[in-house]
Length: 143
Image (cartoon, rainbow, N blue to C red; front, top):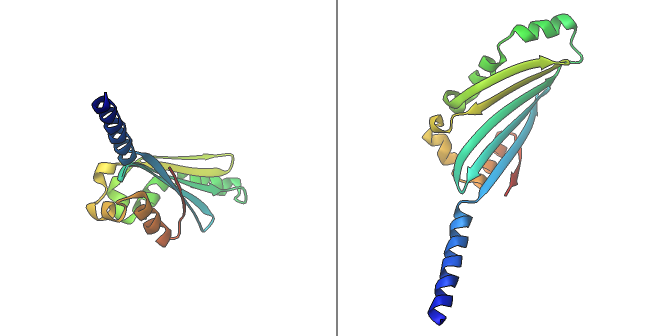
């Protein structure tokens, strides 16, 4: 009987430890630059990045209709991609929309195409938070 209880306790401890290593967390980072609000979200399973997305928002209410029409014709997906630095090659699924005098650009990142150097800087949610905050983001970590 004692062996059965000890075995059960050992199994429960093992399951709890395994669960801790594979916990999900999400890093939400925000920055405003030249009137553009930027949201970068990084999802983790344990210390591995499993999802990453980006959202740009710009209020165009002070722009004339002619200016808004000109903005609609611009390729903001390409512009955003070109400023992504070492994440440029992983930038994918970009969509832009102008509606109600608001520009939004959304994109995902192909995790497999993120450079090894960048992954090393983001080895854990805390490492990623520190790295992104050095570039001006304000980040919160949800566990």
